[in-house]
Image 1 (cartoon, rainbow, N blue to C red):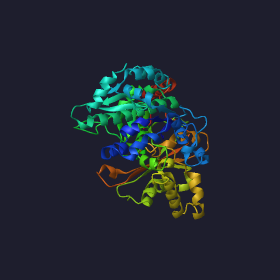
Image 2: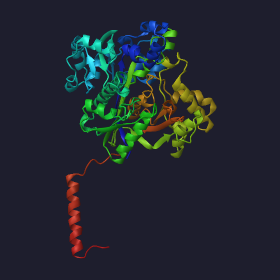
Image 3: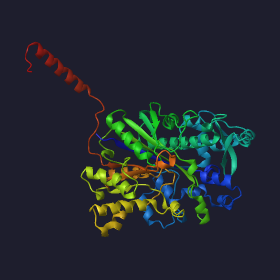
Amino acid sequence: MNSVIKGTGYVLVHVPDMIIQNGTTQTAERAAHPDSAYLKSLPEHLRTYEDALSYWPNQIYIGNAHPEELRQVPFPYFREKKEGAGRYGTFGEIMPENEFLLLAQASDVFDVVKLEKEFVAATRDAFAADPVISAEIAGRVAAGTDITDIDAYVRAGQAEPLFVDGKLVGCVKSAHDTDINLSAHVMHENIMSKASSVLALLHAVKQSGVDAGDIEYVIDCAEEACGDMNQRGGGNFAKAAAEIAGFSHASGADVRAFCAAPVHAMIMAASLVKAGTYKTVAVTAGGCTAKLGMNSKDHVKKECPVLEDCLGGFAVIIAANDGVHPEINLDLVGRHTVGTGSSPQAVITSLVAEPLERNGLKIPDIDIYSPEMQNPDITKPAGAGDVPMSNYKMIAALAVKRGDIERKDLADFVEKHGLIGWAPTQGHIPSGVPAVGFACEDIMAGLIRRVMLIGKGSLFLGRMTDLFDGVSLVIQPNSGGQEETGVSEEQVRSLIARALKEFAQSLTGETRG
């Protein structure tokens, strides 16, 4: 039987100080042009936590509004505050930077995250008040370090500084004297990814009602890699996050495929559960500090706020069929193969048309498509256009070419089967998976029947191949089946009685052939 999706977790962490300190666009600019006008004006374009909280796409990401509501919000979205915006939503939360630094330290097991004493004392209560932060996690936060020691680490080049509201409050030290794979920069990047993954996992188990002890396997599908000089991508983010989240019975491993990784990971998780290898698997990914402020040069130039100011994270809980929750149909998996080709038509054909055709379905039989769901508020000022809309137009054009719809129905198809992008441009985070929570809710409410997630990735970025990548899957209503979780006592007695009867008959020669 198909595996089911029991629940999801979606989190954002507002980290404006990390934009300046850790975003690749900013660090590269600082190295090449330390006195540039862009760097000088950047702080003026950073949003407050309250601004990020009331931002429509952010509220949709954590489940406080439905993606369909974005159609009624005037563009650009940053000019319209969402009334009644809250920190917590159906799927997760938007955590402020100061509390997240305490979670980062709680996620550190090698004593590389140092936080200043007064800062810890001022933030600890608020951090512990978060409903998903257990006493065990809160208890992992150290009392704090002298600010003079922290400043000395930073000045000596041994640590990445941590700021809140422009004030030095801590640092992330290197984990080795000479290994660049354990440098302060890499340790900072990896711990922030791990910590945001932990937060997503905590919300996923809360939202799903699954006990943390029931998670047997975790798959991390972020874009970072942890290791040392002898195996720079050895891993394992999955098991590392599971440890902090309290998944004491879980093992795990990492999956890497650039932006396509989340859908790869969901297919793997669904397959493991369907095969009976594990009963419950969590797919998770934390955020990417390198992509903070990635398009901020264009945002600053056009007098927009810097909208790439949040780390993103998500988690999906996949379990054995319970007869209730939406299923992942593994018969409807699409894949971009080595021989597919990289033209847009070849990619969409392999990911959308081919799996549907194999199962006697047409393109309009999918109610909602969720491809790369980047927020156009971010991408349009940067000249990248509306990424989801471009995908929907390609799918609609393919539907016309295959005779599934008439040419005159192109615009209607895009509106009926598409969504407006709301996800942060964190690479893997927008890639299909932001729609899973809403898809499950709408399917269970009987509003839709099928949702296709499309993950696409640029493998050529790693300089190992110039191939493109992509996979897709379909979420559908539960077929009514349910996995047997065991044999009842009555069934055991019946089986024993039957076996004894057959054995007695064999002794008297009464059995036949």
